[in-house]
Length: 362
Ligand SMILES: *Cc1c(COP(=O)(O)O)cnc(C)c1O
Image (cartoon, rainbow, N blue to C red; front, side, top):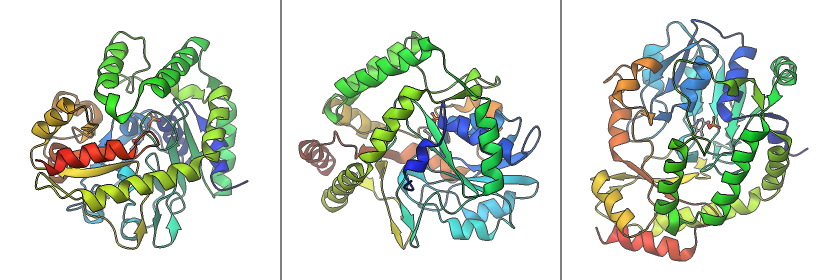
């Protein structure tokens, strides 16, 4: 079995369900504190809180999009485990983070990359366990789904035990996911991004599409589910095409890096000694709202996430996920600046030309 094929072994209804499974296997439960970075999506606190644990929010590093080791060190007392996210596929500075953790378990959030490398090691190989997601917008899309990997024999045995107790989602839910998958495959292109996005939001509001987040405060049924067989088989097919995904995303990101010379955007700080397999190519916008409006008008794909430190939750929902306004000022500022460009296989050279032209004209 190759390293990538092991992604289809312990599969879950979603990535967050895999995260909750890891935490439970580590004996983390009600009242325990789990550190994770602000500048993430609600899926992560949902996974943490499904075990009864409480998220402890850590700020991002100066100029970058990943966890700041110094801020982690400050907030570490009482923490039982740390979730480290490789945002947009950019590897977090894991050695510096691990150095302040004093032997606590480190879990890697690899939802944005299966291939980035740091100091010669592939992400997902640093921590005690890692979790992945295969929904829309991730490097390998199976529909909806997630996976866990670990090299720890004891943890693997516990995860395998728990995995046997999981059920498949209802036929109705599976049908919804499959319809969404085929609609997405047929309709989505960078040039149709804004149209498809509006349609999806409408359908999700009407309950006809599988939305991305559950209401906070209740443990969704999702956490008792594994990935359906048909989606898992599709994932295995996607794994076989992973090499092509990678070559293409490197080509697209390389063109963005070489050709975008716009005063309207700045670059994100990247770690040294890294090879980055981007999920999306991030930029820091001087005026995010104006840039997004121009992009929509020009029918060019520029995404807005993360719009808030715990996307898409606004300030009114922060208490429910234990986030205190102002506690992670860099992550809050980053959410006001970040935009990102597609690198997926549907991104053609014409799409790249269009976005480069737009940005360089601003
Ligand atoms: C997508 C994502 C997840 C998990 O997503 P699921 O919808 O639960 O599969 C977790 N963390 C990050 C950073 C993500 O982008």
